[in-house]
Length: 237
Image (cartoon, rainbow, N blue to C red; front, side):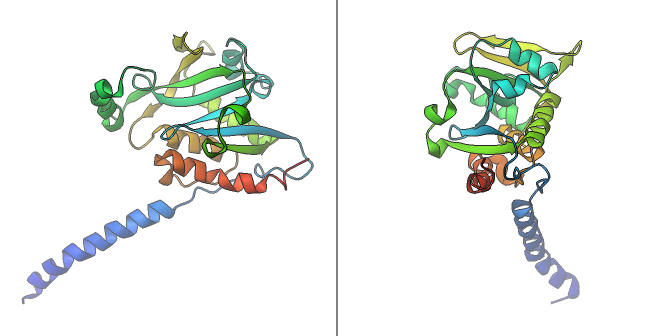
């Protein structure tokens, strides 16, 4: 076998090994948390939040009072919502996320949302009267205790996701059936930045370490919140 033929024979396995190595590296890559923000130091004030999983999409449940305590466009948007002590917050494609028609009819639009690169997004705010610990089963919920600074950082990250007009969040759609309000977002939705990636980024802003590649699924986001469950006794009053 000539040298050039031998090189061609080896090129395929070497390329495959390189690709597999890159995938493994991305899968294990951790975006570090911030120990100054999370977990909360024992005996210090905490804000309890919840990460919710509906099987493929994640939302956050945040206390309304804590959101209103920090002035700004997000607090103003929350203030205009119907009553509810908790606010469910999610993010997604500006069209596919808000559409409630049968999924079978939305497959082409889903492909557009996944593989397009400049899809506009929306931030969803929904008031909730029932405590998430009562409404959502433990398997579909992670409860986190954030430090005051961690919650402030999370709040700032949420606010940064809003597209502002005249200093105010711009309402894109109101859905009367569940009091949901969808505000125009500044980020773009695509397969490289899905709803669960967004949730993971918000949690990372609050100080939690996350695995960005694994956050393509809701299970990957929920796994990032498991340490918080274990940290609850240490962060308690």
